[in-house]
Length: 146
Image 1 (cartoon, helix red, strand yellow):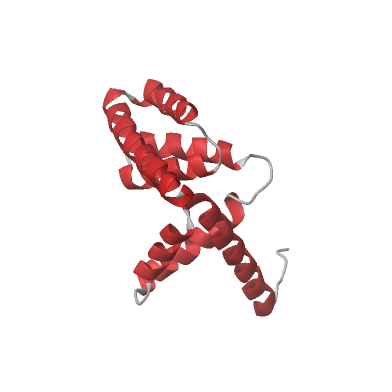
Image 2 (image 1 turned 90 degrees about the horizontal axis):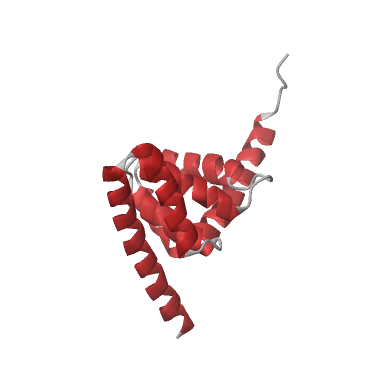
């Protein structure tokens, strides 16, 4: 028999996952990125639902799980996005990986590993996107330091 939870309990669970999702999204992708994503979704029920789902599900429950360091989670996402040729998201997660303590060399090795199993065209695009993201991240870090 399935457990029965009150609507209030379910609402509270969603609130907790959403709050944790926002916290970890900001830690990985940066506050400005998260605010932009949420603001872009305002007034659009389809986009709002997706932002809530991503925040509660992927970020609130997957990224906050014990068992893997954030850097390792970043490596996995980078490899998957590179293999799917998802440039925009790949750039976001390369920067997130750097925020999580990954080095440029480690990200390069993750992309080479993905290339071995996914082919040269995807590797070329993944390396292009990742290098641009790394350069942008380095510039952002310099700006923050000044």
